[in-house]
Length: 421
Ligand code: LLP
Image 1 (cartoon, rainbow, N blue to C red):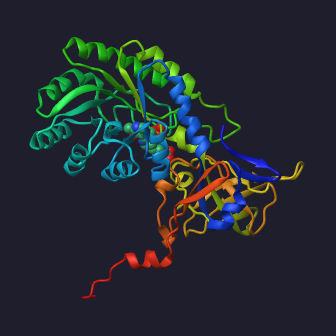
Image 2 (image 1 turned 30 degrees about the vertical axis):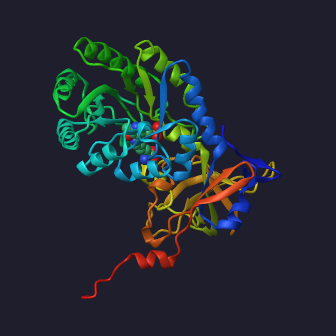
Image 3 (image 1 turned 90 degrees about the vertical axis):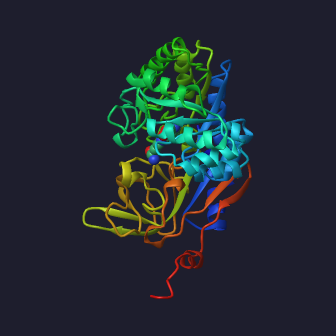
């Protein structure tokens, strides 16, 4: 459930009419709902009630500091994957003890940054990375809590570009080598083994891969404990999918996912960390755009919007489906017709949808892409020198710009032409 509903014939973001935001900030823009973000965090919290746990919001999904601060206020921590995300998390007030640092290629600079600023745990993904962290920590005279990311060789049954738990993927160490690798880590100065980390992919719509992976983690926990390691935390990653296409069967709910956690690893006495990103932010955001032209092509009708692939890349990158709805509620019984929904960028890949059934639309009408709160603004670029889309946060009847649209001047001033040219 989200908080973007039609009321009095127009789409609202909580208690604010979307056209009011469009009038204030111009289009296109992203808008996020505090109530929806909050509800999603609470669903996980309630699902894991009774188990010691920390929700480490995966901020790669939406790293605006206002969103991250809200997560912190709700008691969550964050999962970061770069020095930039770490800096943003700290700027948003997340304490070091609630920051988990993940990622397959952390640099020594990033490690130093986390050790200086404080970190809950660093998830290690390879032996060279372990040696690097050991050197950095030892040189700084500190000991850092670590977990090793194991690759369970489980098929997440999701898009190949976002599956991470198969042996052919670059992530983690093969679970079959865990025993050997944990013995190595335990012997390295500056590192303290505290747990096991696993993440098998994103936009999972089936719980079975989780059941399989978490059962393997449960067996590994027992084995590593028998080998003398103090496994007190399990980081179970993120990845729970959201309903992008309303006509499809709904993916499992957070409570059902949490039941799988409870059933597979709930009796090990470990503190549970989960790293949801998309489920928290995805359906908490819209991308709102305006129709520039309706163009009659040969045998097709193009809806040309002022948003493009640089603003929301998921359709062209993954062939992803995003529901597109008119901001003015269509009258009952109106005829729907197929449109190719495109942006103004100069490539054919700049297509959001082909043959999408929509009610009659014309120039200047507003449309909204649903489920755009995760992997939307964060993946945007300035391709075609199109300014990054502003972000707006709505809470009840209030809204604020949480990242402004850069002006052409700001963009142009960023380049430096050398004096010798
Ligand atoms: N933890 C780790 C280690 C991850 O790599 C990811 C996502 C997450 C947590 C959060 O997964 P989520 O709960 O959001 O599914 N750009 C793609 C998604 C890439 C996901 C990468 N890793 C998309 O737009 O679909």
